[in-house]
Image (cartoon, rainbow, N blue to C red; front, side, top):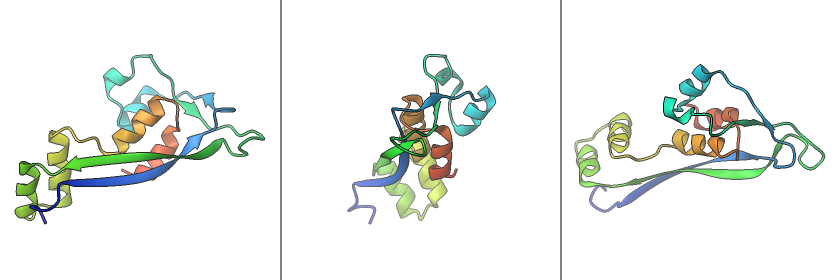
Length: 126
């Protein structure tokens, strides 16, 4: 398999915030760091949002948005697979190679106001 697979992808769907009623949310800095944001991400240039609910959406969400992880199979990852490495071994190597995981993909969506932190924590359950 290691020699024939060139790319592995993972996907999750998260609920998309309703643009008509989403409202700014406040989180303690520590909660954002625990969720996976880096200290440099918390520079005040963005703000998270929360779901409110309105006649257009009923519950604060309208539709879904995809979270993606795309991992090219490099020679190093091939070696991990051939050595029968664990899922953790693969994840650690992917991280070393700069592959964004599902949580990181979700945090980008939180930062851009597309979904909530709670939604990302729920669908990525890390």
